[in-house]
Length: 158
Image (cartoon, rainbow, N blue to C red; front, side, top):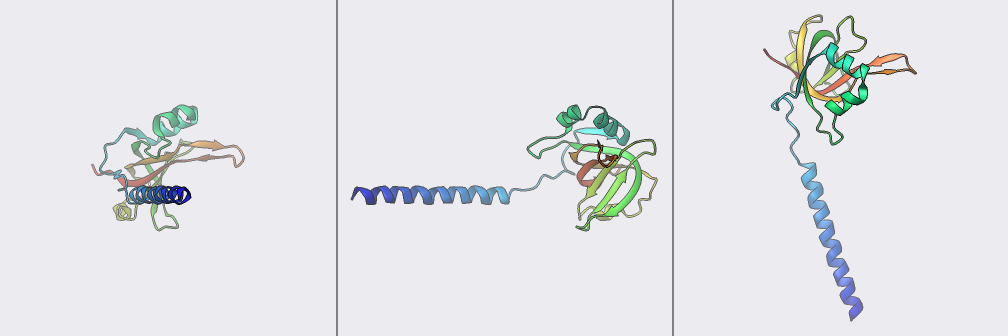
């Protein structure tokens, strides 16, 4: 008699735990994504400013711009358009880099904002708004500079 009661309590607690865990998982999966373009800009910089900030003291720059919870800062970066390419997902990727800089800013556009690059030409100075994902650095093994990476980007209209 006592054994059946213990099994029943364990079963009820197990089912309650599964329902609670499933509900939390479903809620987290269906949470709305952060609307970067509608959000307020945290910092407005040039490509030279952010690249030099990361190359001089990457730890301080990471503390300033990046967040471990994925809620990193939203930046507006101005610079000369050096390259336009497309990634494997069909998203446009622009590289903002001044000739004298060692690295630049690589900004990945969303499928919705890809068309906003129509009419933009290489060499033109543009401003891009996006969320920062990683900073500039120097890879000693490859002897290359890595660019600052922005995600969910779009062109800022003046």
